[in-house]
Amino acid sequence: MNYQELVTQIKNKKSFLCVGLDTDLEKIPSHLLGLEDPIFEFNKQIIDATKEFCVAYKPNIAFYEMLGAKGWVSLKKTIDYIPETHFTIADAKRGDIGNTSLYYANTFFDTYNFDSVTVAPYMGSDSVIPYLQHQDKWAILLALTSNKGADDFELQKLESGEYVFEKVLSTSKEWGTEQNMMYVVGATRPAMLAEIRKIVPNHFLLVPGVGAQGGSLSEVVKYGMNEDCGLLVNSSRGIIYAGNGTDFATQAGEKAKEIQQEMASLMS
Image 1 (cartoon, one colour):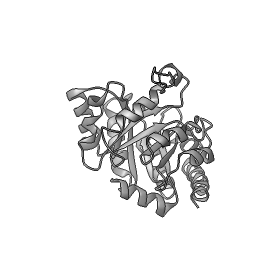
Image 2 (tube, one colour; image 1 turned 45 degrees about the vertical axis):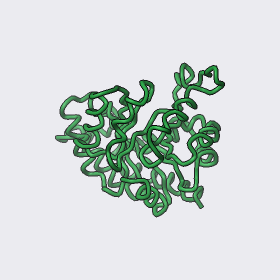
Image 3 (cartoon, helix red, strand yellow; image 1 turned 45 degrees about the horizontal axis):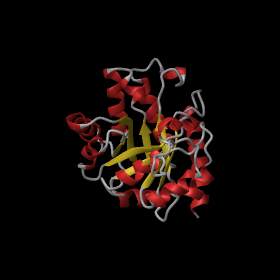
Image 4 (cartoon, one colour; image 1 turned 120 degrees about the horizontal axis):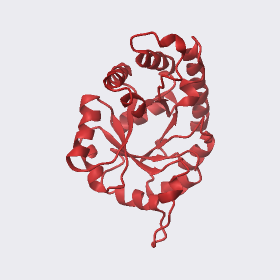
């Protein structure tokens, strides 16, 4: 999916919601566990219930690869089931170089047909550029994350006066364009978005941390939205685990609708 197609979806739906498919066998409703593929069945029902209200889906790859071969099968079935109108993110946080980076890119873009993959840029340009060589595909670079450990490196200041995350932004934006690179910025640090927008005014930002992690959607919009919206705000547990009974999908859909309606009001 290219930049303009994504922007069009956002404007048509009045939504910039991304649903995170962090599908955990220990958390999905027990009535699904006896099925041949409970992970896919859960995802399928979540997708059916939320696709009207969101523009993207983000499977967290760790939840699938921990299950071995059958987990990768569930992932492939999930990606194939997601409508082509929706942007897909492989939340894999890969960060290697050379042929390894190239084959990670081929895995997620060619084998699994994701639109994008999250990438750790701390090994430099050769850990990112292989992802940028695929047409209409995206690398989503970790910039300022919402975890406590972000203080260990990302928020350390360099001799230049820049934070490390600011150096990541200013350097990496030269490797690609707003047409093929996004950045991860946690919703729990919304005021930082204003500074980030000074460095990358036109790039999309993938913003986790709204919902279960306590981030404020209105604050994210206040500091981070640009003329094309420029945001994909992710909610995972707050949507997919909104209910745990036989009506779990209905409750997930209601939660997704609630967030979409708030987004629509903030976009107007």
